[in-house]
Length: 80
Image (cartoon, rainbow, N blue to C red; front, side, top):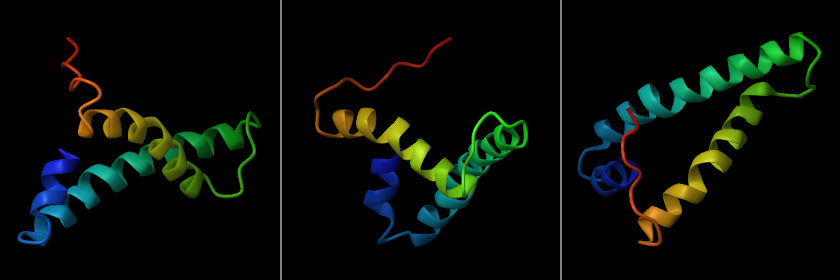
């Protein structure tokens, strides 16, 4: 999905904007909310849960994504 959006974003910038707002930002906000709750419970300490969420999501997704994009790993199949 990222590759498709990146390929088309110059010609269709609204696709990139929509993808960013409704996929990337929404997912980041969910992770940030969870991290804030963990801070409130005293389980972890973070200066900025929003920044930490972006960093965590980047670490979780970029390595597998990069391997697929470079043809080093098959695209994951959908789990049932």
